[in-house]
Length: 602
Image 1: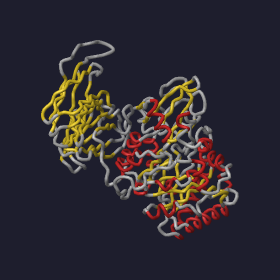
Image 2: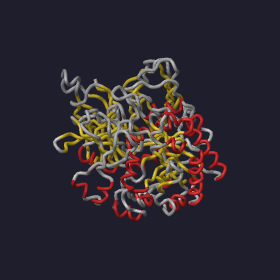
Image 3: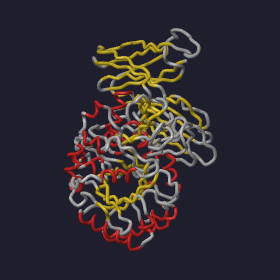
Image 4: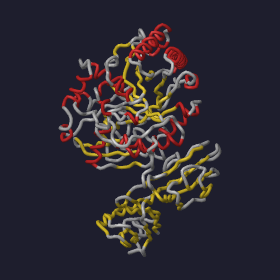
């Protein structure tokens, strides 16, 4: 369910947006049992606003950005980036980076189930979204929504045909490219009628509007088993999993809205399992997308920690708000779900907000690429406001400008704390832009009788570094080509916890070595062996230097700003009393290059 209602901002944020926009969106609580889409349309429908200018006047700059044509022009190729554009965002579409959108979908045609016609289509007939997107080569779709009384529509042949006729006419009117179906809360009794409707819809569109595309939104968990995707597949071009609301407004605890993994802490449901579920139902990867949220949820809680008991209904928070709050209050990473959150005191109680940002989205995007899915869906465009990093995440993974960051983490599909899955087969490439070498260090490793292969290059045709099975860890490996490719294959027998690892790259004409010095002192609990790290490095030219130390979850645990250093050899000592035993990545950071080394703490 697309639950995207905002949270009430603190007073210092209210000044950034118009008060009327806050009243129309921010702070509206979401119901635990019904679709937030439906609730939002009811809320906004009570406002007598008949055009996009009216919504702009109400919203101010809440949804607008200046992303259009920002940065490098990159090609998505065949990757699908499908974004829903809610009517209440007004003309936010004037700022979208269409080079990073393959498809944009106007939300929505509100289906009248008693007739098959619409109760409202808002500005579909006049919106400039259509020419904006078409001029950029982005496909345009109309979303049809229905959240109740499904049998009234699906059980009546005349109503179904009338809906199809109406959708064809409206898509043809705007020379658009297709239609998206978002029917939520469908009961099990409507499984066969829904599948029959989707087949009829697809066949009619493909016959009467050649080249048109039919898509459907799928629930993250098909609780009622109402979506017969195998039957639909012949007539539907794209299936988009709504990979969010695993924790929702009515959840009993504060947890990840869109966990990539569930680990040992959360319920068994997560985005990776949702993808596996629909693939097992017979969908081909080339027809499947993972939907991601540009929003989060904030709950009143008993404490300031992840998983704390909720003491009331949560409210949804736009990404633009969550980002600003996290910057102010402190962003915390929850590793088992691969998601960030923040906490703060409000009205004498705690509040905890989970959301998604560039880092957590990139990890899901990497999973999408590894599973060879068609791409992603976004709920909803405009909710990032004027922040560019979510566009950057798309560019960095799905386009021909894609490159890995110079430091990062990589674990199996089960995440850092969960088991991987049966019958997996995928590859992951680490290729930072301008890298001369990539070093990858493994912290834990157990793949039972399955196999991980590592190659020194951008694909599995590159030179083989090694193949690893059981508990024989690769340890520390370096790709001297500037890239590493890892390929994993599992069978259906035994699955284990897999691995956690982190990488760092070197680029430019710099060299660095690092070694653990003799411990400054030896302590027992709570600090095991502690000591210093001696870092020696060579600079090709005078540079401002920063030295960062990362653990194998990719978290920066220590950093030293060296300031300006002359050309030549240097040595510095990092006091490491706070570092426990383990493996760390040390990275020299200077303008124009990075250089990395691995240090073992004992």
